[in-house]
Amino acid sequence: MYWRIKKIGPKDIMKQYGIHAALAISLLFNVFALIKIGSGRPITKEQNLQFDQFARKVTQNLLDATYITYEESIAHLLTQVQQSEIQKLRANEILPRTADEAKAQLRQLRDIKMVTAVRIESVNVSSPNSQGLIPVEVKGQFVKHSAEGLDGPRDFCFRYLIGQKGTTQELGVASIQEIPVGSQTTQ
Image 1: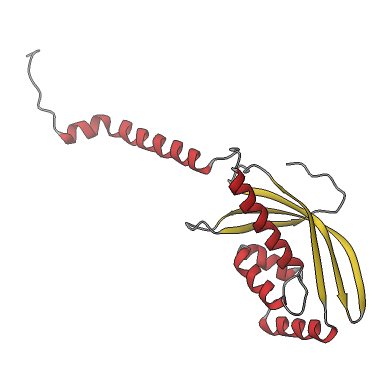
Image 2: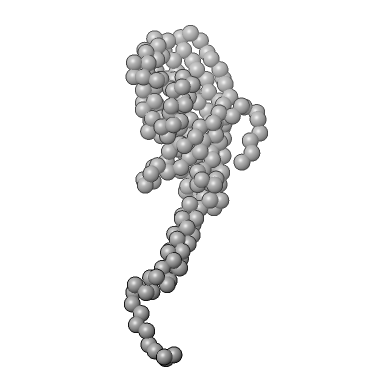
């Protein structure tokens, strides 16, 4: 009959409306993920200061060839920079490839009493990119002085892509790019 009452259970509801529920959950998850990433959202003053200070520390460690602090700077770099970038720095002979190479470099720096002075002139923190990483550009000069004489001053300009490591709030460098001094950069 037309007016017959049909018993509907959870199984019947899932058959009929299950795909709609799955799509709604997926849509909510994607909206939440977009909000959390915050692409294009401006960063706060506290975050700006945090990224500024972190970029200064990384730059100092990257350019440090002072025989007193060399080992410490290398150890800090290994924790501040993503592993793929560390491999690139080692391949370009900016970082020592092995522990023996690091000891030899330190011995050489001690023998000539190398001291490095780094002056950071500007740090430009930009808004997050499409991957949620923060582009930071650091410009300045550095000078190396040793028993052999003075080397510099030399200008430098680095662009870092900085993000958070895993689930911690710790910052890490995902990419390091050396920019030729005097060239204009666009974001």
